[in-house]
Image (cartoon, rainbow, N blue to C red; front, top):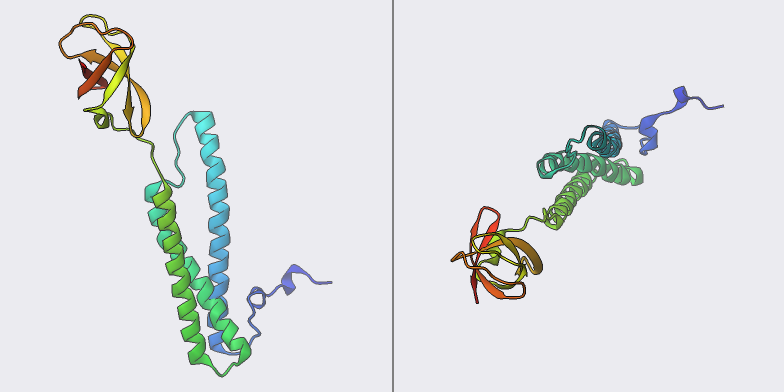
Length: 200
């Protein structure tokens, strides 16, 4: 019966016990694989921890924000390089143990290719990210409809297109005159979180 003591980790990645170069490739693949598994487990725990902290303490804990993504990118690139460098080299040595130079070249190409692919993948993830921030200044010059009557010298609401969507903002008339619901008005300025509008 096999026990845990009989488990040879280097054998798991394909090292047959021959040659120093094979040992280097196997160690690289094993270390890259272990780091990947640890990183993946920490990401899963980090996501759970973020939800727990957010729910229990009401804090905003971002385990993988934009800054963390860029820091992790280097780590993930190194992980990918080590894993594929080792596996690529072992694959060549498995066919012919005399081809050490070819194994180094293939391992390096596989490692750099995986590192490049990882970088491109994370570039895509960052490009897909959107913070959803709406700039009220985008509504300047737009014509909208008074949604909630603007009393004389007071504040009401206007519906205006901003950020390719119809939005409702607090609004105040430029001259302090009242505007009725349904009136058209042009946004001429933004002060704090209130749009200054002029009757159209």
